[in-house]
Image (cartoon, rainbow, N blue to C red):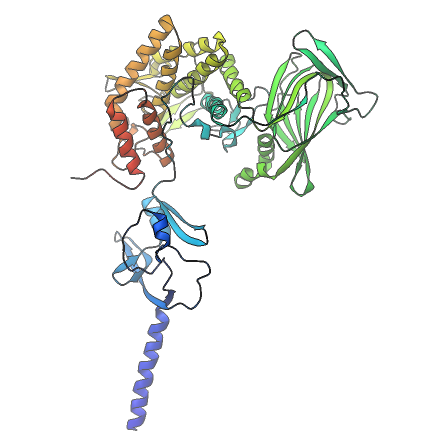
Length: 579
């Protein structure tokens, strides 16, 4: 009996040990997610790679010693719990919780056979200026912008070659800020990128036209002399897409098509594309006021009405395909569509007309820059502005269609000044100078000027009542004024100088109102409306930094560099000291 009692006691203890062992989970001792010898931060990743806590080799997965951790509940603010893990004196909280709670970012990355977790306090990037700002040069860091690929760009208009925006209006509208950014980004890319690869397909100089395929006796091509442009190719073909047009085969992996054309009848320019899995798609540029549509494998862009005058036409076929297919795909799939194109296989013409300077290239940035500049010249109204024809709501504030934006004025002026510098065409400078008018008109009277505390002049991105005082839009408006004052002459220069100096005086006195100790405010609505502050997202925070770093190259006041350095530190988790 005594033996049985001892046996029962031993069995009970053994069973209890087994249960406790099951409750505690084994972990690879070489797994850096859990094993810690010390908690010393190391800055150099090369140094870290030699440390077993830094990364785990993919091949090092066998014959490990187990290390134990305990599960523990973490009580958050006495409101709810999160499952955590306890290892000695350390408690580990799931990063998925930390990410949401603290608005930080991170992911597991792989490099050279090693795995590590990369923590980022912010997701955006600062681009310090490489040179002193100049109206001849790159605009901020816009060489990194790709306006046309944005989801809020419905397409690039076939009528005027500028973006059509769905921002604040799904029907599509001309948004001057987006158009100016489109032009400034291509101008900046032109200055910073290598020269594009260009293949001339047709320039009218060669009498040998055998590259053009004539499918029937109803089609013909010949070289003629045009009094406007010189030698060009004249073509005749049925104008119906149901009939064969004249075609030229293309064997090139570039996607930017440019040509000069003049149609004398109804007609179409058709591009044939080969995409993955051998599928064929067609993009038709037709004389129609319909913006964009798709039917099966056929995408249509409207060219507007037949003008019977010469027109220069540049298209990024990859973007046109992506936007066309995007009409029937989800947002996730849209971003992948451009990459599935293998090549352009042909260009076909229907109708009667003339064509010249047909090229295929890797880029045509200046063409797209001038498309934006010409749109701004053609659509500036008598008040010198570019009205935004959709309603805009900012919290409890509302702007009716037809409002003006100081940011639109500034970026448009920066674009127009650059177009003038390159061409010396006075129409661009005249339009830029006309843009000064709205800076002198109060926002209550339909202009863009406001006063903070009745003292400091501010040029409003959104001219609401009461004012919202958006920082990034204000600084863009100042850059436009700077560009005009550097190029204009006489009274126009004096006016631009006065408006610029007045704005800079306000910026120097108000900049620190936007510092919240761990980031920046997007605007000052919390002061003017008495509502919750509107914190700037990290991409807007870095825009603020990029802007004041740029300002620091043309204004020596130490405020700008000191403030930029502090705001950069916020992106790494630093905060202003407390009391």
